[in-house]
Amino acid sequence: MKKGKTPSKSERFSDLIKKTIINFYIFIGGKGMKKVYTGKTKDVFELDNGNFELLFKDDCTGKDGVFDPGENSIGLTIEGIGRENLKTSVHYFELLKEAGIKTHYVSADIEKSTMEVLPAKVFGKGVEVICRYRAVGSFIRRYGEYIENGAKLDAYVEVTLKDDERCDPLVTSEGLEALGIMTQEQFDQMKERTRKITAVVAKDLEEKGLELYDIKFEFGFYNDEVILIDEIASGNMRVYKDGEIVDPMDLTKMILA
Image (cartoon, rainbow, N blue to C red; front, side, top):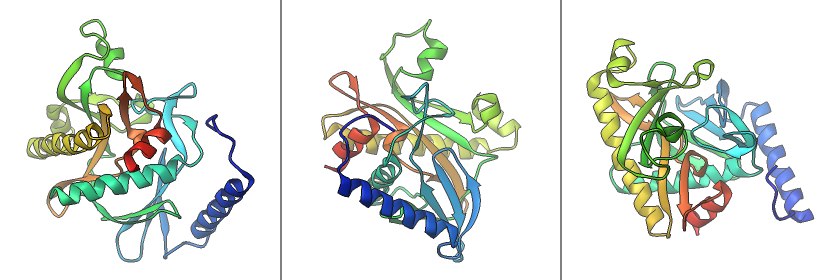
């Protein structure tokens, strides 16, 4: 659990009740739910209406107890971050809707930490797309001989395969096509949407006195179109204020203030 202010007795009791409701909801199958996937930070259920439901968990990617959205394994658990990530996702999905950018988002239940989404198909076994405004994290670990930490990047887009055993390897558009994961046209659509979505998020953060360094997305295929899936959460972006990285829980509060 993340260290910080000790919750009051009433707050602890409220959290216990909410967790009990969520666990019971899953146990009885919720709205006719069938669990179809267990992820690092979310579980996925199939609904009777054909859509999917995402259950947001309190696990975060990182290493040795330090938050890092660029890592491919669970590094820490922050109590309540699942619900906070959901709140942030809803905030940004609504902004993208206003901007005319299609996503898989349908609706959300904040109390249950769940979000209903369209049944988009993932590419291959899943790909992740990172858009970088500054050189930090895994980018510096790979290319630190050629660029300074924190140097500006021009919305640099890179793609990795979701593959824990191989540490989510980087892959090119040619590689994706050769592997039969996606076409060059689909890659170009995904890259274009990545930059548009990142610009929306960055602008919103800038208005709050924050700077986006990088952000991670997932895309899928629905009705012959590449659309954003998964989430847009504090735990999937690196944001700085006055040169210091902002903790995911604090970031959510700043975004939703």
